[in-house]
Length: 264
Image 1: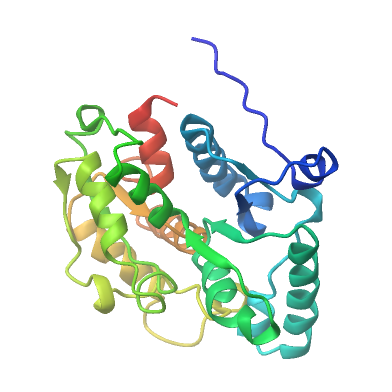
Image 2: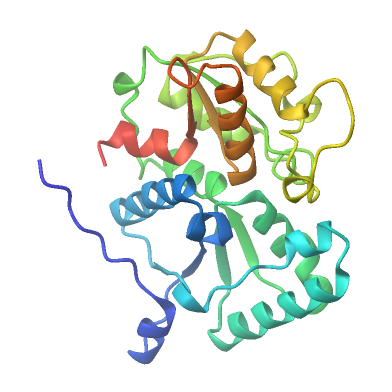
């Protein structure tokens, strides 16, 4: 069956035609440059098209939010990057932003207001769960019913922003085989990449955090580890490779699972 080609609307093109989309979809650095996470972006875009959502992306105009710079301690670079982004978003009269990266979500929601960057910021799981609750996004559980799934809580969704219920609600609708890790919700272990750790060498110790967290996931005996963050996906994928489990256990984003259940 031929795959339907989806045209992703670009903000500058819509603006030139006098159109104003309801949402800006912030793709993020990982979604733009990381080959694995590009698949997550494609899955989410297919869902947006399926729902006929009014949205646009910035395309080549999108730059980094400055989050990695701030986490690494370079406050000057962060403010330069953030102010540039805020200026661009205001020029396009952006009111609502959808993010798929928890790090982008957190900095837009909690830190940009200090620089007069005030926007309504929505994580994609909140966005999708609302459509599911309203009956506009109908998930076919039968397609994933026999798949056991566990979920890893990203720090910047969970502890930082108290988003625990939405991913679990979605996964329980997707499959009857949802299973929690022993450490979950506010007690979940970090993947090991947050706070700028992704970009530096590990400190001395007996075991790296991503290996410990991968072991937590493997103890559930789930066939899929569901993630909702590009950093977490990278670290857990590496953990599965380290444990020689990449052929037995898949690491999939929740958007990919939804797109799979819809046959998109």
